[in-house]
Length: 243
Length: 359
Image (tube, rainbow over all chains, first blue to last red; front, side, top):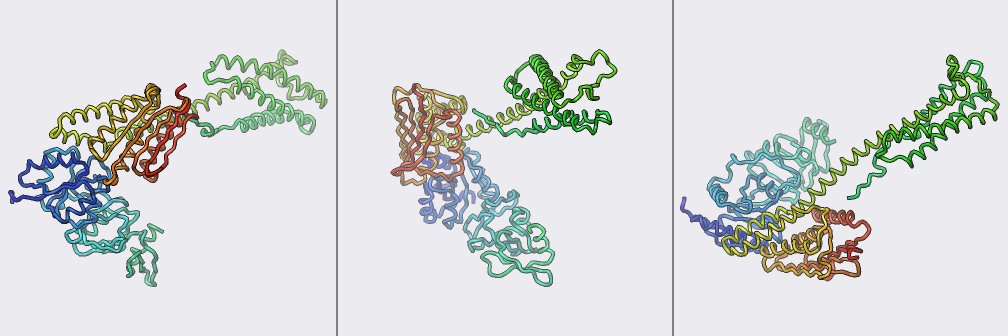
């Protein structure tokens, strides 16, 4: 296992930065850099072709961001993000428990990041507990592929055993390895409300609610054809909080 | 930095409220002191009202005079003497007007309100009454200045608080512009790479970078510096970015020889150059060209900063940057500058005009 060589790919818009990282990676016998790219557009072309096992991804690129690349390709390998200074990106890394390097990159920190790659990716011990904000992006995997969804784009979250099914306003859904309680404790309260043990909805996406004679109610949400049934006590809770 | 707070400070105590309350009180206590048989005498009551109205009118004239005379750092003694002298004048005028009025209304000056000092014989008569009449205007004056001092003190405190906040804000904002953290860490990263690749170039980049930092730390947003220094630092900045972006960035700087020593407000060009780089390198197919030209036209100094990038007025951070430059220009060159940004033939053009700088 130890001597297994991993293929790596570097995305950075500055040639000096690519040179520097490439040079540092030469110290690791188990990493082989198989390609590099200087923009979002060329990375989108090259990464699926080469399918590297490790991706060193700079966030601030001249024609977009590193996240744009991940949103438009299906990549299933490991990622180590790189940034010079970017509060927004760093927040995204920490929210999603992703590893990242700060420029100028230190050899020791790089070593640690590569060491961490060996640890299983769904290790919950490093799971962040930061509370989400409306414009935060949470990284989700669909099959093996990585996507980012913005918190306020989530319409509804349904429980699915140890997982949860997240539906977004663009009609897509994602199966995520987070429990309902985890979601409940991290989502912003102003926007999300638990409407039953197995369901969280985005308040802004409620178009209409119909109260039944027995006190329960039906909620109609944007883009979701079937209404959601809410018990009397939960419906009361919603009304009290948002009416 | 010009600060304007006119109309900002709420006048908690209105002059006219106090006037009305004060003279109203005088009328009331005069009425209360009337003997029972005088209380139904309409003429006497009218007379009482009239002398207080005269007092009100005279004290309003006093205020007009005090307003002209009063200065923030006047000594207490001066105010005291002026108040006393004014009160004397007030007293004689008031008394004369009162006597004329009494004559006109044929009010007997022996009505009970004038027999204040019944028990003190020596104070009766004209002189005694005059001594008594001196105190209302004098007390009025003391109250006037006391309140004025107090309001000034409040205003002063508010003003200095606000000025402090304003200055701190401006300073923080300037620091943010001058040392863009992205620029800072990317430059350090490039130097780290160059150390292995091209030691000479790493050396040059490090020197330019420290000079840029030193300039930034040394000057603040109100510093005026010779034009050639501002140009020097802008070119240092561009040369650092040129090492980073290589052939993707090109720049030319031209400055008219005879205006090189003219003093201008510092950091005027930096925000625009930085903006150009931020947006101009967005499309890697396009090379970014930055052209800076400073020249004279008569007595005016003209700064042109052109680039082949994109002008994004919607970007929040950029708008803040532009607003900051606008404010600084407004403060430094209140009525003698022009500032304009526009797009023309695929160039973003910034025009700053500083009028009458070369006289």
